[in-house]
Length: 374
Figure 1 (cartoon, rainbow, N blue to C red):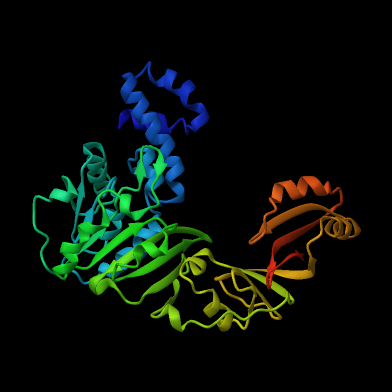
Figure 2: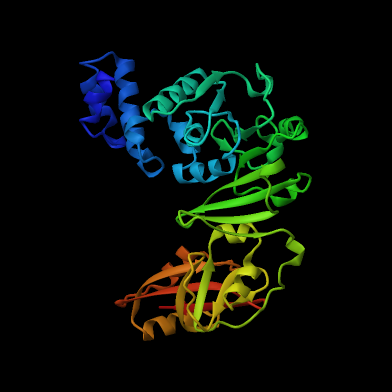
């Protein structure tokens, strides 16, 4: 802690590591200096995820894998009213802290360093909770009824991300016994999961977006399940759901109207684009693409909206002529359903004007178009 105090006063960044490590090594043992310097740097990086990051302990990998406090707190709300929460594979305790703020919580972690960090992090936050170092596939205790489980399986092998749920460690089959005993289970998985891999599970699939970025998918089993698919937008805390995807509206197709909308990615992953379109009297440009269009400007956190200036079937020559005519020099290119790479297009256009535009490369009823937006 003395080394941390001295290191924090330096306000170090990644690029300062070698210079400050040499200085601190003259005052502290080299491993102590290294650990203090890494911790101070990671605390700076963790500011985006934790409001009290300057009190917490991290490893680099654990911080990269940890959920933001907003997401953890959102999940923890469904545990309210249970006797005890069990955070299995708790790592440095990010989710343990959110759960322990709601109810008595026990975290289980195999790695001794992460387990000790979880203990210290709970202590730093003034939270009561127990951390047990153990293999979650061989728990040294039974989980009693009236409890709930949060499971965060490992989704990396070395430095490679694992997207196939069949290769998670432990595999998701570990939950079958708990669910069979009537214990509600929440499982954090990759937001890029292939939905067909979840077909055999009786669970709610929730996709969570934070500040416009898709962060994770969550599976809710047992009494935690409230619907089939849900999209959640944080920090607003709003949700959209469907109990039966087969009952969702059919796509309504239209050419670009006065406004173009890009739905939040959680809506896309939850398969709720057509429902969102109906709710805001909007249309899709193409049945396979999630861009929406409407005559009015809906005020909704689910949508990013641009005013449509013009649109036409894609032609590099025509697009360049249009942009030159309108004195465009700064261009943002977004695409869905187009083979063209935005950076390649910008290089080919060689624009020199003073105005700024956003161009969408996409499909309208199967035809390649570009939509110019202000």
